[in-house]
Amino acid sequence: MADDEIILADLSDDELVLQMHDDLYDGLKEEIEEGVNILIARGWTPYDTLTKALVAGMTIVGADFRDGILFVPEVLLAANAMKAGMFILKPLLAETGAPRMGRMVIGTVKGDIHDIGKNLVAMMMEGAGFEVRDLGINNSVEKYLEALDLDKPDILGMSALLTTTMPYMKVVIDTMKEKGLRDDYIVLVGGAPLNEEFSKAIGADAYCRDAAVAVETAKAYMLRKHNAISA
Image (cartoon, rainbow, N blue to C red; front, side, top):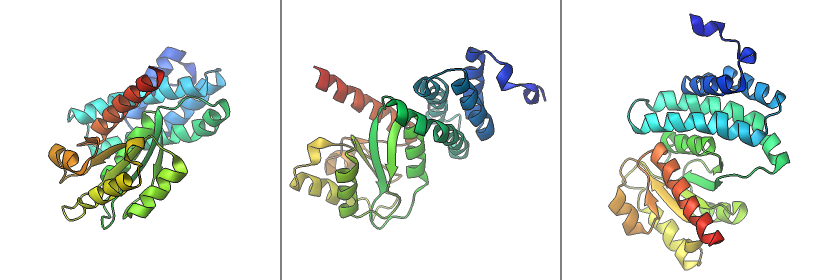
């Protein structure tokens, strides 16, 4: 197979970045780690490596997932490869104080132990340059509020896969309203039984039917937020 003969270190910067997009798409973790290390060794900034090689590559993955060309298993592989690259870049990004897209706290609601969709959203959001704290499954309103207080995120993401746990999202949002916190956060909700109407009825900002939509929605809200601040 000709692919086996590609030596990443022999490629020019532009060729290497395109090759990394392909390797991300194919979920090739070790190749992504090698590519990241090569770019950093060549003097690329951690931020440029993140945005041009990894985030741009995951954008292609996200678009094809949204369009039904890629499916969950392939996206999880790509996200895992992305995470391996991020693992190298994270400490370097922290040192340079590189800008981030925004911060998100995400978790499945109380009574619900489903997490594949939520995990995918968390990975894709990291892939888009967001800082993500994943609270895992079965989160009470207290746990969400504590995370909001500690992490000061821009976005709260809640997931539910059961019709019986969906109403708990309203409990969280209502409690945020009571405490005068609701307007401080963008609230995104998702999960198989949800829809746009439900999202509006409980007072969320948006319903995201899948991980690709969640990333697009989060980016759009962050852009609006930045524009409002700079206006």
